[in-house]
Image 1 (cartoon, rainbow, N blue to C red):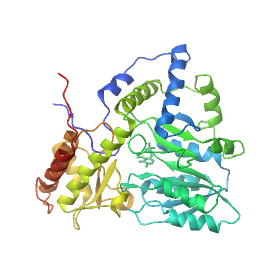
Image 2 (image 1 turned 180 degrees about the vertical axis):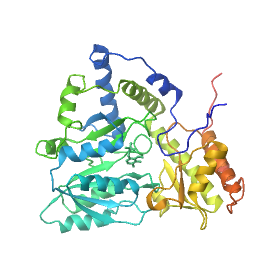
Image 3 (image 1 turned 90 degrees about the horizontal axis):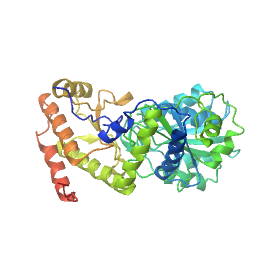
Length: 395
Ligand code: PLP
């Protein structure tokens, strides 16, 4: 029998059949009029998901990492100063990317499990009296630690400091799953990808770009070719691409947007929050601890969970895969061996989440974890029973 189990990694997500079908298409000519007619509305519809009316959406055939690179190279010049906090593997990698591009990177070190330190950003920006800092970079949802940051608070800190730096936000694992308000938060570049909230195959970086960032593009001198906004925007303006587009992904994105809008973005966010809360109830019932250092930091798309002292989280995730055929996220960076992650984003239901909780519970029991078999599932069941909306099944 083939393994039909869902994955519980925090992206790529399980791909709904509807999107698999949308991507299952024969080659078409990307210079033909029907592609031209398809692509422009897709870009426009993405704006609703970013929460921007004044910004522009730009995509590249790439994963999210390419989106980071596009953000930086299109707006900054060698030696430019950027401010960024390190509180997990993905903020760490964005720092590394900036350093490798020859930027002057001011890093605020934070405990992993914390979110973006708005107060420390404010202090650093106030101290920058010559306004050398060109951009503040923030990972909205740190997928390694299951921590969501308060981007509104970062914007407020920047405003309090009266600092004109741009604000770049990595929303790779939050967009289309958790509320995002690009215009309201004054975000200049928001970086996302196709394989998380959009529930598609990996391969498309999706960026929201403000007018301020587009203005910075005119003077930025970091080298860029493949990721040059100007080439992409010029081609997009005529409904085309500067090189061969990922056609199947674009048709998939069109369908993904339809799915998100049919459910309603607010309902999508509420569903993620509720499912995440069910997982958190299970974690508490197991007597285990989230990596997120306080409850309001807990992400609605991924829960990172410390294993008890003396246990190896890699052994747990390997065992769950080998014995039950179910994947969970491993601990990344300094969390490796100490924590595992349950991804709960994309096209998920109560039933799917319960199966993920039940399976990791079996794996923990097999490895003699000090948990009571069934306790986490029961806690989530109770929560889901209390909060279910009640759905009529079409017959
Ligand atoms: N940023 C965050 C928060 C992520 O979770 C990821 C991937 O998981 C990335 C960036 C990198 O994206 P990609 O793996 O698509 O290059």
